[in-house]
Each structure stands twice: as structure tokens, then as C-alpha cells.
Amino acid sequence: MGAGMFVIAILGCGDGSAACTPVATLPTHYASRQQCDAATVGALEANNDFDYPALFAECRPTGSASNEPEPATPASSRRG
Image (cartoon, rainbow, N blue to C red; front, side):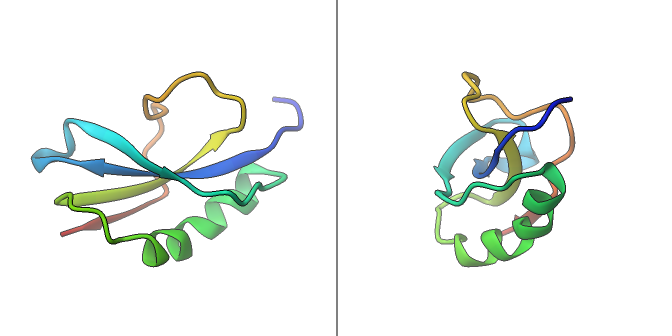
């Protein structure tokens, strides 16, 4: 994979985490997936005021046309 920029997406999920919906994309851009992954816990702690039983933070490449979560397990999560 070549160089790219990543952003953190916050996803709100219903019971069982089967149906997740993007609820926020944070404005900070990261130069690598590793930098982005390292920031997900703090991002989720600062952005947890959405009305969903479970919230997940995941890194996504910028310019991604998809609103669906990537197949990888989200780096961080919070269960309500």
C-alpha cells in the first residue's frame, strides 16, 4: 500500500453491532494508519455523545467513497 492520509470515523451501532452507521468523521488527518490507530482511543473518548448502544472508532483512508466499515475490526470501541 502506498502513502496516504487517514481520518478517524466514529460509527454508531445498534444492538449486536450488526448495523453500524457513520456518525462523525474527525477533521484531523494522519500520515499513516499506525498514527491514526494510535489516536482512536482518545478520539472515541472525546466523541462519545451519540445515542447508540455501541460506538466504534476506525481509521479510513481519505477520499474513500465507501461509507461502509472496512472489514478489519475497529481499533477502538465503547459499549453503552
